[in-house]
Length: 207
Image (tube, rainbow, N blue to C red; front, top):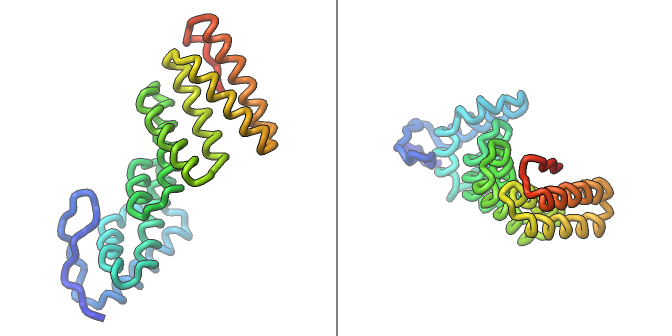
């Protein structure tokens, strides 16, 4: 296999990254073995620390061995996910055209915004999560996204929209015979109705 003198890194800054004059297969085997050891040890910080090397190698392998390139991207994506770096995980999933991965990252990013009171930003990501889940036929994802969206709507005073979503979640959960989700949806509907009647967001208690 041809030796590789330099490759353009696929990282955010797009810098030129020098690998070596050694054959590409040797570089690939060495880095993949290192990645495998880090994953086996659950050392996700170590995985993410190899971002520049892994992205450069994935770029080189894309036209030679697409499956290896995809494995490298996926491993890096898992590292971001486990470390809570959801925007980076979303970017990797988009690169791989992994719609389920993008949906999961959107869910996590939305939840982060929701935790700090950024309900407008959270709504945008939960809408993406719901849309992709519908596209993939993922009924569980649709229910989860609907519940998250409803909570955002309650906290922004959109009680009517929240009630509609909780009703939809309850109906889908009943279809799936998910008793836990049915109970949660019923509880959320009660809380949402009480908040709407009271006209205050301070008493909102949603699961």
